[in-house]
Image 1 (cartoon, rainbow, N blue to C red):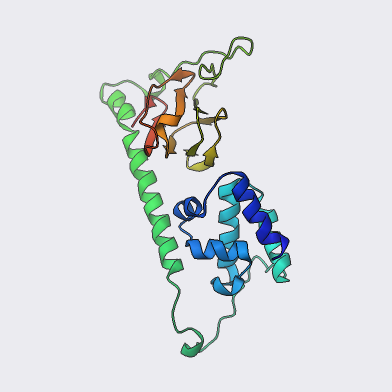
Image 2 (cartoon, one colour):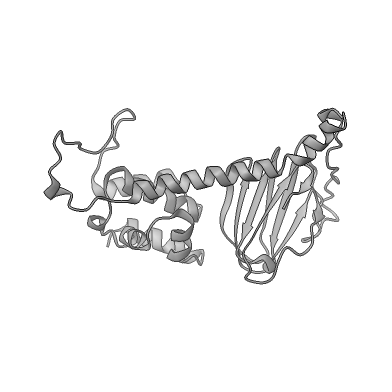
Length: 251
C-alpha cells in the first residue's frame, strides 16, 4: 500500500474517528471509504467521484482537502483536468456491456443536497417569528434590542465561564467539551466544525443570522450564548440539534 491510503487511515485513527462516522456524515458508503484507505481504486466509481470522495473524507477529518486530492492524483498518475472539461470519457453510443449496473450514487447525492437545503430553509423560517412579532407592533427592525455581550477579561476568564466580546449585529456560541464528543456546527450556512471535539477543547463560532449545533453526546459538552451558559441540552450519548438566532436560543 502506498503512502496516500496509509496517511488517510493514520489521520483518521489519530482523531479517534470511525469509518461509520465518516460514512454517516458524508453519505459515502463504507466500502468506498475502505477502498480509499486500501488504495483499491478499482472498487470506486472513478473520475470526479473518486476526487469528491477524497475531498469529503479530508474535510471531515479537518485536513487540507487540496493536498489530499493532489496526493490521490499523484498515486493515480493523473493530470488535473481543465476547469471547463468534464474529466470522464463520454461515448456517443454507450455499450450496455461496459456498464451492466448503473451507479445510484449521483441520485443519492442529489437527494442529500436537496434534504439539506430544505432543512436549512425550515430552520431559517423558525428564526423569523421574533422579527415578525416586532414588525406587527409597529417596531422598526433596527430598534429591536440586540443581545448584549460582556467584554472578555483574559485575567479572570475560566473554562466553562467564557466572556465573549461580540461586535454589534453579531452573536457567538462557545462549545466546551467535558469529554470526547462529536460536534457539527454550521454558521450562516457554512460548516465551521464537523468532527470529535476532544475533552478540554473549546470551539467559538460567530454568526450574523443562524448557528446550528448538532452533537452526539449532549451531556458531554457545555454551551454558552454570548458568554452566558445555556444550561443542560441533553443527556450523555444523546443526539441533539439546537439552533441559535440573534435573539437567542431558537430550538
